[in-house]
Length: 200
View (cartoon, rainbow, N blue to C red):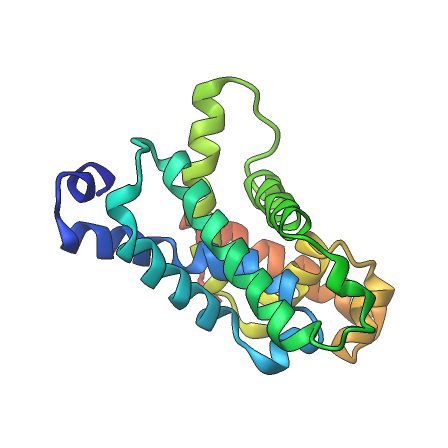
C-alpha cells in the first residue's frame, strides 16, 4: 500500500491511513485521560491527523512503513499539543502549560514501546524489530475489537501503567474484580490474535 501510495495512488493512501486508525486511537487514548477526553475524542484527533497526512503526503520523503508511522505519530503529537493548549491548558495558571511538544511526543513514543512489546515480547534483530512494528497494527486492531471494559483495563494497566487499585478506582470496581477482568481480557486478546477458540 505504501509503495502504491508513493506512486500516486490516492486510494492506496486512503487505505493505508485507515489501516492505522486503531493504532493511532490506541496511542492517543492514554494522553487524553481525564479532562481531555471530555472535550475531544481520540477519533477526532486521528481524523484530523489523517487529513493533514493526506494533504501533505507529497512532502513525505520516506520509503518504509516505520518512517510513515513516525510521520503519523509526529502529526498526531502536534495535533494533541494544539488541542491541550487550546482546551485543557488554557488557564495561564495551569502549570501543565509548560509541557512541550517534546514531552507529548515522548509520551506517545512510550505508548508505542508498550504496544510493540505487549504481546510479542522483546526482540533485538532489525528484522524482528520491523516485524514488531507491523504487528503493532494487528495488536491495535485486536484490542479495538474487544468489549469496552476489556479495552479499558488493558489501556489503564498496559499503557497508563496503573496498579489494580488505581485502575479499580478509575473503573468503579474492586481490585479483585479487575484482576479477573484483566485475565479474561488478556485471554480473549490472545484468542483474537491467534485465531484460536471462541471470540467472546
